Image (cartoon, rainbow, N blue to C red; front, side, top):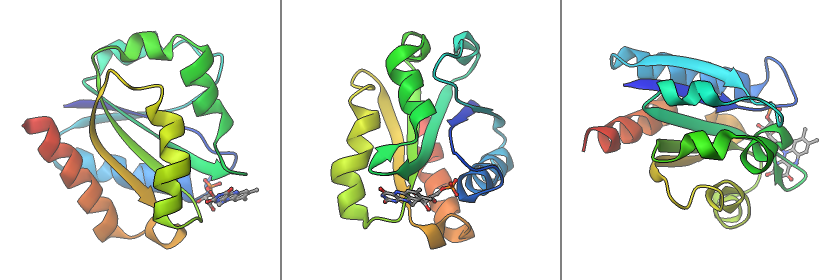
Length: 147
Ligand SMILES: Cc1cc2nc3c(=O)[nH]c(=O)nc-3n(C[C@H](O)[C@H](O)[C@H](O)COP(=O)(O)O)c2cc1C
């Protein structure tokens, strides 16, 4: 599997940065080739065509998925290069999972109606550095990819 993690966060070295490094390492243990890229609303996402799986995630700030990832999905050529790709989603946020599933995940999923979603996960603040929770997410992603 060749996987790219497309992420955004307003902080550097924050919980999202640490989480994606852990996801990448866990996935690499399964033999996958993994790269990461911080999203920009105006970016060129043609490099996405070189990957089998696109993992996308970001924190929630003021009820919205962090703006550069959401902006990239709406304004850039990202959606064009996501056509037919398998994707996995994650969010980091402080809200309860139910609220995140109802209010936050749809902000991503409404842009991915034609994609197969291998795994999706809301990471609460204390879960972004929890090896067990991260391993579960990667296992679910990997199992769905192999099906
Ligand atoms: C300014 C700010 C606004 C936030 N707004 C929300 C929110 O509306 N809903 C929520 O569930 N979490 C909210 N959070 C919590 C963050 O989503 C959570 O702490 C996340 O892990 C931060 O990621 P980061 O460390 O990469 O910046 C907010 C955090 C900050 C700093």
